[in-house]
Length: 489
Image 1 (cartoon, rainbow, N blue to C red):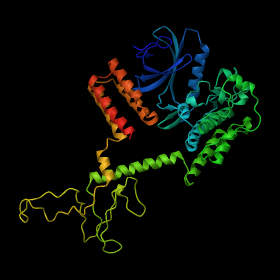
Image 2 (spheres, rainbow, N blue to C red; image 1 turned 60 degrees about the vertical axis):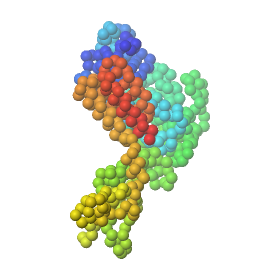
Image 3 (cartoon, rainbow, N blue to C red; image 1 turned 90 degrees about the horizontal axis):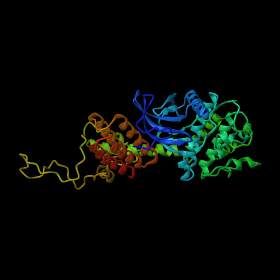
Image 4 (tube, one colour; image 1 turned 30 degrees about the vertical axis):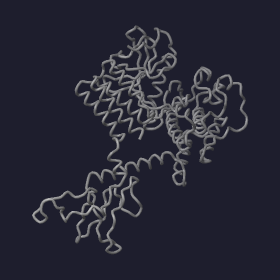
């Protein structure tokens, strides 16, 4: 059994007779975030739990209540969703405040930055999405006050802004010093003087984050409150430098870092400026806009899959011997995995030159010799003279041979894993909440970290707990091997 968390809570306990606690996934101060299963709505959720003695830590419970209200007030696809808030007495007689949120699988942006600077287009795309979230929050009167790399999660759907735990409403007086709440390198200079909560402080923090994504480090070397409070900055903010960085993106980043709040752009202006820079990069030869590269790569893979499907699923047809140039016989176009070739029909869409009324398209001959057939005209054991000779027949393209002999694709492997879970649920070999948990953990591992270690560990843990059968465990581990092979190419 897992060791108890603060307050004596363990995995397997049920909160308010509804939320089954599965495992802790993050800790901070006196709060713990649990992966949990909502038994009423049959879905996985995240539960942020703060518990303590009766009457103790009233300020912490008030902060959680404010976080829940602020986040629930903001409706945006790139912000964390809050489902529920409450206070209850646990089975150990302790008072617990909790916030129930959407469970997101992904990788913290801080981990991504630790691996090195991001390509400028990837950094700009992330910053633009966050700026849109902040613009929506500011429109609702909410200031986040803790925009940091740790509070941004990279998911399959893009960057998500998390943790509104110290959010305040615009114009609200700071009752405490900035050093009581916030992360030093991201705190705007005016917050050190105790000014009211304002959207400009979020824009400054996002400017620091954009600079960090572009360069791998924050714009100023100070990392502690003492260093920040003792420094007196003069002169313009530092300029971000990155390969291929457009001047307009560099200017936006510098403006966000302006010492005066009035000199910074609004969050929506920042989002629009970054979006325009990304759109402009599409028309620049050799631009490294990540978004378009990913789309082009995906399109090429889809086209290749369509070509392979056409070649293997249906017999290919010869083009008509009559062409626009005369009576020369047209050769079949070679199959390519990169999609249509300018000036030629796209084989991936199954289009071929139409046969003329006086001719009939003939299937391409196989690469093996024709099997001898016994007919009244040819006699037993002689080749059929109607069979097409193989010496001049086009060979199967190498890419098709490779596709036929390759392992299942990543999508096929993941679908096979999920199908095993569904079959296990039907046969009673795994609990529904455990199956749902494994599906989500695999999806997060495949799309973000590309590391299947968490999935393997979870399978072993659930088997050890008795939550899935031995037979299903072996089948899942075997299928996970195919997923790993697909991930490594």
